[in-house]
Length: 216
Image (cartoon, rainbow, N blue to C red):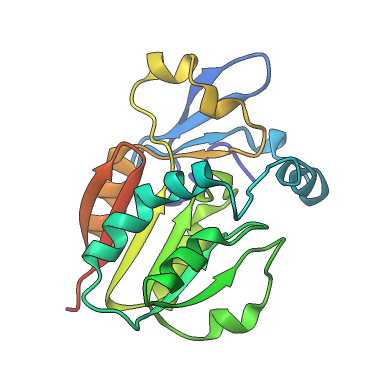
């Protein structure tokens, strides 16, 4: 892996964006993705150990309220109930999938560590949700290409991740301190992807974005 090549859009011009005592970060000059130094990426074993420190309790009302920030606008954007959905990167406690299922949608889940049933990646979906996972993607171009394959024309992609704003704010941003957070998106990054791959883009909250795939 090279710090000179964007792991999202494969552009060859990436510049140093920020450096602290932990690691350095680079920014793509085209899509503006900021990504952690490739030499600082954790091994799969160390990454899993970090995830196991998280407490995603299905009965935690605070966690449910947090997920409602994505679930509510997603459900409002869907044309009907009974649709086929995929919660991608569901983690050890797939509460969002349960919430969407309770709202009348048919849900599948996938996660590389906690729900690695690749059979669910062999069909297409009316919508895909991804909460607090894209920032963990070492090579987000891979997951994005997979989503393009999995999402039906007219389908909705709902993503929750904190977006960076300026270099000054990034310097003191707590979000970058998690060693498993390696890819950081801004509004321009999502705008670039939406324009390139024919999505209508809606910024719902400061950390929630909906992308609806055009049918033609």
